[in-house]
Image (tube, rainbow, N blue to C red; front, side):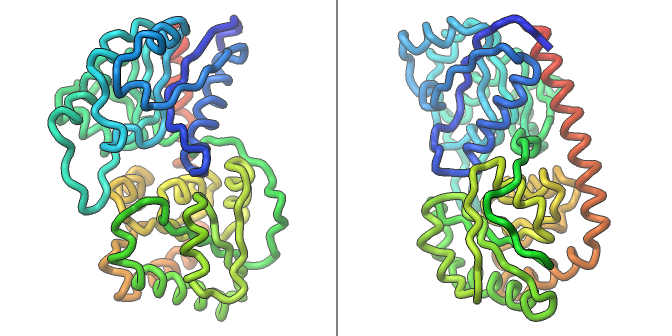
Length: 343
């Protein structure tokens, strides 16, 4: 722990309407403050890396530490990063819990986009990524394997608070859809809605379940009523309270990655409906590749079968998540100690 006052420039996603993106930012800053309790943290949108801006560069370099992360910042939406801006970074630069995103059906990155990620990674004094998939991407295009640490998603370690909404007793099922800009939803719309509805109705009938919709983005207001699930309850809290609510659920079925990340971080078994390669790779990083259902399998009833199997092995999964959480915590603490050495 560094008890002197330092300045940290934190580069991150700026979308505060997306609960997952906000959870990552809050988690990273909580973790940084655990190592630097007197730190003054200044926020910068990831877009500052897209073009050279001398005035912004001066502000970044006035900090004692520049941190990028976490979340899916290696994403074509933010690319390419400016090579001139990267070259101008002078202070210790850290990549913290960042991931590479490639949605199902999306084209590969253009060479200039890919090369700008590699240039940024080479600039970093320390690189901590959220799963092995991102590490493989960086190593494939030139980073040394030993230079890339797989630490896990920072949002797994976000602090938890009791939700303002008092959850009902008995079995509780949480559902989440991705309706915040993923263009492929329309193709799979009916399969997604039908499989979610079938699963919810099964647990309502056989477990007298309360079913909660776990809202992560305002865009979901246009889709979750289409589930047409009887007595569906809305859960929409700030990230720490939302994570606290996840900890009270018995099972989460999520599409947005951070719905599943919050569930796993709260030690609640989750099933990941994979609209993106990162969904699959989170399950692999978790050590439970079976906790993914692919979109073509939805019409085969696989989601309900998988949900029943997970509940049947509930204690096993909770024990596994406890071990996983401890491993991520240790890796992150080790990474933070490496950051401390740079100050």
